[in-house]
Amino acid sequence: MLGLSACTSEPEEIADVALAVFLDNDVTVAQKGSVEQRLRSMPSVTEVAFETREQTYERQKADLKDQPDLLATLKPEHMPELFRATVTDASIAEAVELVLEEVEGVEDVVLRIADVDPLPSRIGVIVRLKPSATGEQRAAVEKAVRALPTAKSVTFEDRDAAYERLRKRCRGKGDLSTQLQPQMTHESWRFEMPLTKQGSGVSELMRLDGVDGVPLAPLAML
Image 1 (cartoon, rainbow, N blue to C red):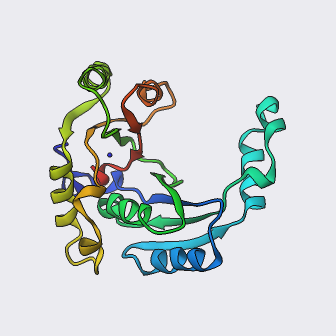
Image 2 (cartoon, rainbow, N blue to C red):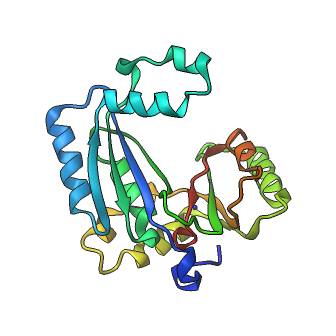
């Protein structure tokens, strides 16, 4: 998650996309193998690596080292198993995410800007709406998005428009365009903003009723 596309972004603004594929708690060995095979066969997906519960636990311990109360509640057995990968073509990363979410054994798929140096100066923000969002909730989300002082090129995209955009981007990318289905897409508000250390207001959007997620993405994903 406009009016902006991969072809309008300056080269230095384009970044890889980090992909995390979280597995169901009761995922089978066969399903795990199928998820990995699907990942490795997808266009522009590289650096596929499996992460055990113990590895996830160690990563979380490092992230929460300054939050002892939360750290004390962590248990290795509560951590998910997952695959991590990189999508080198940000313009199709959203299609990769949506297709993978439908694979048996997958609990969730998360996209974020990859750790690169230097980071891009601008990011894209995708505010996804739940299908069940009410008119009142939708109006509140729109008001909150438009109130962000640094948000630019704010647009709304319905599910049909999202499907057509992604389908066109997936042409020539193996069978990704045929795997993508209209019902997989989301309604969303999409915009760009500077990538800074100061608070951007995006975290508040995540807490609004009717919001299904707020991925932060390279501009080429928008």
